[in-house]
Length: 367
Image 1 (cartoon, rainbow, N blue to C red):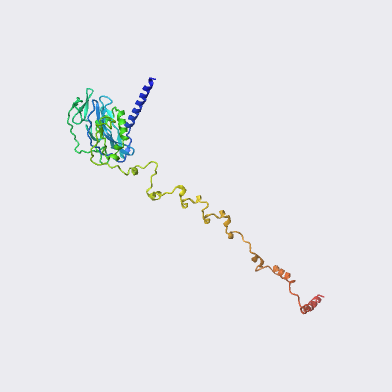
Image 2: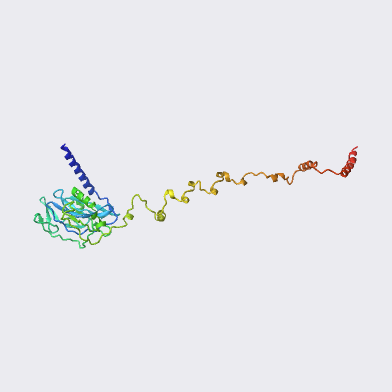
């Protein structure tokens, strides 16, 4: 039974490492509109030896930028320094590059985060004999509690002071990595530690830290330790140079995947497109309308009840059969005459005697 707490601790450690690795790998995020300007805020005092300042930055999630407050983080190993996260233009959108721990500070877009991070390298402190020394000129250090300090004036060579939070693109910082920064990017790195991942997740879950709500002025700009959003040492942001207004056309720029792209020539017709059950009959193909075909469009073989009579061989009508032909043969003309003789009227006695008198001489002549 003693092994159960050990197993639970091991599982918790694996989950924390998975969260840290996931946050470290967030490089493929591409956003079409730039992040807000960096807010102006004061740095909380360093809480103790070994804490290194990690500046705040704008992250992206849930269709909105949100502010991850700057905070003091204990270095995971002696001799490691923090390279801040930054946004850079990738050709089609802004790509996020997460921060990391390493022996040297690498490229972070030339972004001036302040407090030792002025666009290249780190001027806020250095490791010496296994102990971190703080530069009082750029850090809020209480010398009563922290004795490993030094004072070196940092000369900022940037003549233009701005709060731009991204590299490249329209209005971004125009700076490329130096050879030593490229070399630092190929060295051994450690992703953000567990408390940093939890700090970022807590910021994402806080609606007041979303840019659409605070308009570039987050109420919690920096914390004394990771996740201490309610600590009395929390520092609010001052007004930035430009008030941020969340773009309203993000849905047009990035339509949902389930919605097909609309063709410009069909926009008007597709806006009131009927459902398949409510389509007008005229929109159906002719083959889908067996009951609504016009009779004239059917072939003659498909119309047994509507055949035209002139196509049949016609027999003469009764009136036409009763009439004799106009030019009958000779024998056919005599036949009707013989048949009509018995039907003639009876002869008178005088006509009968006259015929008998004429028939007698004719009968005697052959003798």
